[in-house]
Image (cartoon, rainbow, N blue to C red; front, side):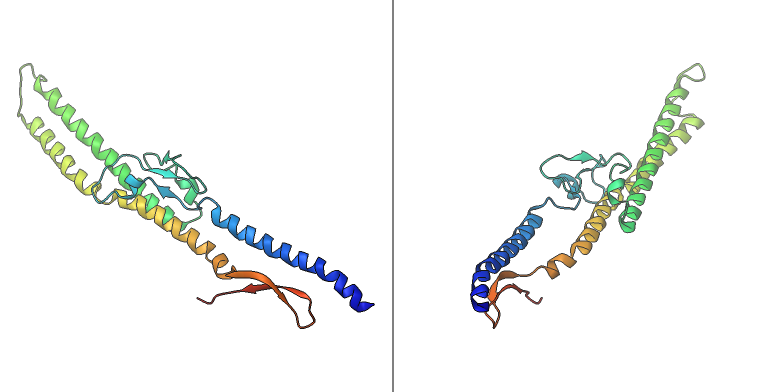
Length: 204
């Protein structure tokens, strides 16, 4: 009688094990197909080098796919909420903001020097192009233009490093699941003939 009950229950146990195996497989597949949890710069911005263009960076937020890029803002402020939990990324983003602030001040100094030079042309009644004030303005303007080269040298790099630091942190946090995920899922039988869920891991 017990043997008959065991045989009758066997198909149901087999179905349960098969359902569990299928569920795990679908879960793993769904996770693999999820949108990336990383921040991605636009291809052009990702390839910026030293002394490259200084326009705003465009990026895809975590979990976003396609071409829905958004601007990071002049100081990178729109990227900050996404990297708020990563100290290293925030540090690089702060350096990027510092460089952009210095760049803005440098531009204001250059414009001010240029305006002062122009104001002095007819400032004393007759046209003058090289009085002492104008000489000083020319010196300040030339210094500002030269300083721009050094200010902008690493600015882009700081933004790229902020994104890389964030993505590295995401990869580290998610690294536990790939190591625990079984490499194969199937069905097996115990010595008593009962169905068992068989999981296989590949050591790396």
